[in-house]
Amino acid sequence: MEMLRALSHAGNYAAGAYLDDRLVGASVGFVAAPPRRTLHSHITVTLTGRGVGFALKLHQRQWALDRCLETITWTYDPLVRRNAHFNLAKLGARPEEYLSAFYGSMGDAINAGDESDRVLAVWCLTSSPVLAAVRREPSPVEIPPDAVRGLDDGGRPARLRRLSASR
Image 1: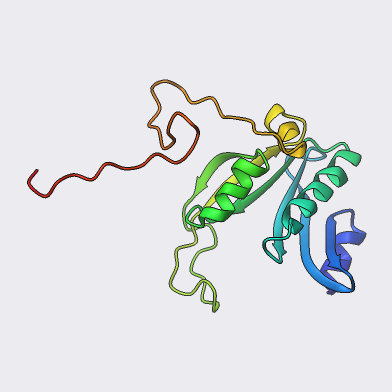
Image 2: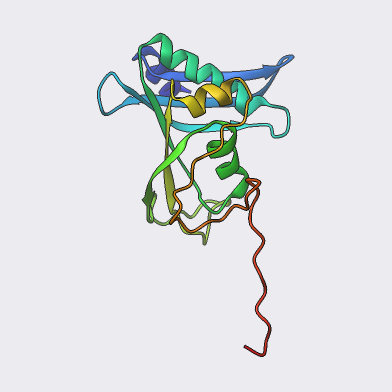
């Protein structure tokens, strides 16, 4: 609690989301490089399935815009599909960098035995995909014609064809 108080007092982001009197989400971030342009969102945790995460990210976005910040960055585990979908499809963030073993070996109860690879997401707060996401409108990503596609023509995950055992 002392660290959150100090971060907030020093001009960084700390917020909680409440349902009635119950804390159902929290988010903490700090101003990052480049100076006066970026907020790095270190952690956001929420009760799932109620729109709390989306509401917290919108609050965080407005907080950053009110301070003339241009982007918010964060990392996420690329193997957790719901996080990737939330970050890229629902929020309009873009993956910028793959960070191998970012946190090193993690021995806590949730992560024990898992790799700590992460993707750095960049949320350009006034970009077209983000503005569409804020309005809850779809914003299809233009896929270069020579890219390996993981989506079908309708924007859904492509189904893999099974190879027969005789091949």
